[in-house]
Image (cartoon, rainbow, N blue to C red; front, side, top):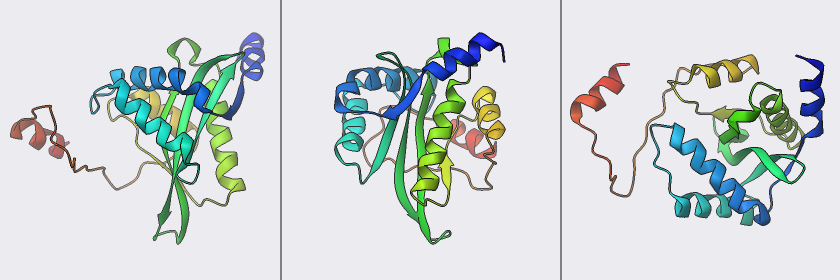
Length: 176
């Protein structure tokens, strides 16, 4: 890593998000969902979801990576219980570093803060979903000691889905 990159990375700080950060967080979530095939960006939904976490800290936390007053990265972690672990565990969601700040150590800094929080609060595991098609994100997380699970994610949407997915597309995904 070039010396000036490390210096830049050390200037950014990770801290808990606040309600005042909500507009920047919503925009980052929108940017993230623009890149993902499974989700449609919706300002209202992203704002509502982020607000649910910010207003109820017993549900989870949102950490931001801030350089001066500009948020350049964010992650939200949700709290749940694992019967397999017999303990509290984290679900890591919406991990995002602005594209112009990637490859400079910021993602590692943000992920390290999550890990430190998890250890300090005695969580036993961190689980995340990463895009199947994003080799970049898979490399990043495996470099940071995440391992692939034998489990696969499945979803049941409880509201009608506006996207039409043909039976052939569903079978193709299932076969992969």
